[in-house]
Image 1 (cartoon, one colour):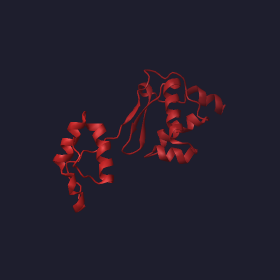
Image 2 (cartoon, rainbow, N blue to C red):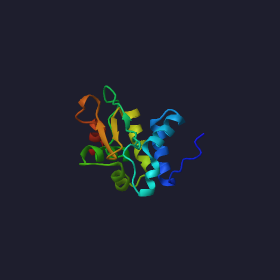
Image 3 (cartoon, one colour):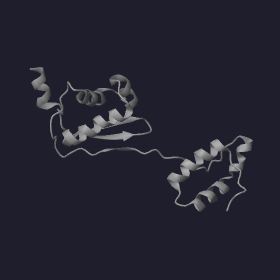
Image 4 (cartoon, one colour):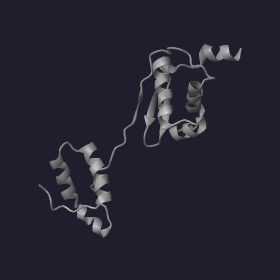
Length: 150
């Protein structure tokens, strides 16, 4: 039992989050906390050896071929077009552009992947989505866009 350890609450919560991601046992976490010397919070400094929280990146792999052309006039098509053509397009930017919540933006991407075969890679650090087209598909909007325009 380690009942004599005194840790600042804000620093403790940050370290506890990192511990969940990086340590397998409570004993390993406590050993690292003690070794890092977290009592230095009284001096107003944070030790260099405090583990950092890693953000999860994600995404979906594209299909081998385009399953179905994306209709450019739908909101799903406009979301795809936004990330294909906007420089430095972020999820937050798409939320503002289309008046969507964050889960709604990712729901469009999940549907784009399942129905059309378009993949994406999400970079959590920059909040950006990189579009992955199936087999270097030149025109993902294909026939569906041409039928709307005609």
